[in-house]
Length: 75
Image (cartoon, rainbow, N blue to C red; front, side, top):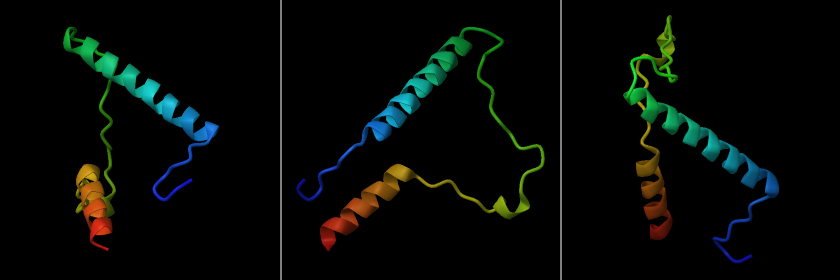
């Protein structure tokens, strides 16, 4: 395989398929929840949040990937 080519094992493809199908179920449940009072999807909220995570800021993975791609092109 040439540079930049990716090799996906059958196990990798199975994992991706599993995650994709599970996410489709979540999206379907969210859509059905919009039309009813009682939905199937619940948001998880910590009852006792970890104090060491108080300053945690979510990471924008799309932005991180763009920056890494730009950095790779510069080198």
